[in-house]
Length: 413
Image 1 (cartoon, rainbow, N blue to C red):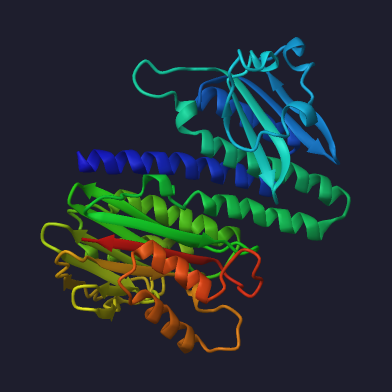
Image 2 (cartoon, helix red, strand yellow):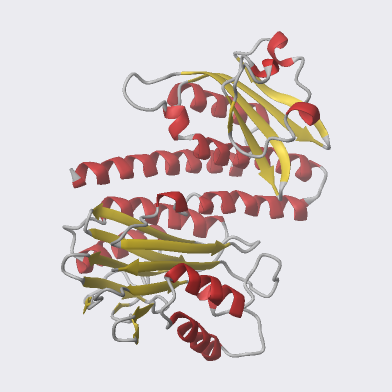
């Protein structure tokens, strides 16, 4: 059962990654807009079983239809984007009885860039599966992300032809940011029960990087979690981390020893990065029944474990070098920690180096002291992270940080 679940996760990750790679390569090859849209239409119809597609695109502050398939002119001619669509800021399932103008449409997907609407995707005639949920419904956020990538690419072509290369480069970074954002797990599926509690904070920088964190609930008593950071920034970093995520999801199971997991991942990263990049990585398993935490720190910032029962704070450093630094890692040391949680529980704080490399007068060591001090309290992990953000003045309006900031907290009982 667990292997089947891992295979399904790999298949889903590979489908998304292969699709992103295909369109990224097409964009880099500078294929024409009509060909790009034709490939996009074929993907929606053949792979996701969507019968009707309509896209409104904002072209120099004027809304125009750039793709219309399956809808006749009568269905779309009465739609006025500023009047009918601009108020929609999230994926919306239309109800014919509420607004007759959308009676032939099933779903409206808005596409934003810098909080500005750049396109609206309207779809209809969705193929419903007999068993389970429609593949369209299951992939709505992926469709939104892919549409965003294509719309940004089309806009980049326009900017290039107007010799606005600087602006085009900036929007190209949005493409990488969208790829990276797909790696971030949805907070709504975090476990929050009497055994585990997960909380996270992610603040991307304008220039994309390669931060990644995730958790897997193997069974009712055991979870796995990790955090990683690829060296460098840009599309290549985001794609390398996407490939890393796909392989990790396939390999990371309760049966896989952590040292073997690290060695296999290192070979994959070494082959794909070819010495140009490396990944720092922390991975752990926790068993609620045995209270045992197993972990490996592969060159990553040491997470902090705070045990409320003993009031002890410990940095989780045991492990090996970063992934991809050498073709082979000869020795991987697995850290094993028995956590006597009693009734008070313990919490673990994982973070990437963006948290400690904020431009400020104080030194890195001082910020590390602040992090450990704030986290070493009885407060629940989410409250500790919020206090940490306050103490370090981390917010979207603060321009002092120059890398992605990722914080991932795990509470165990």
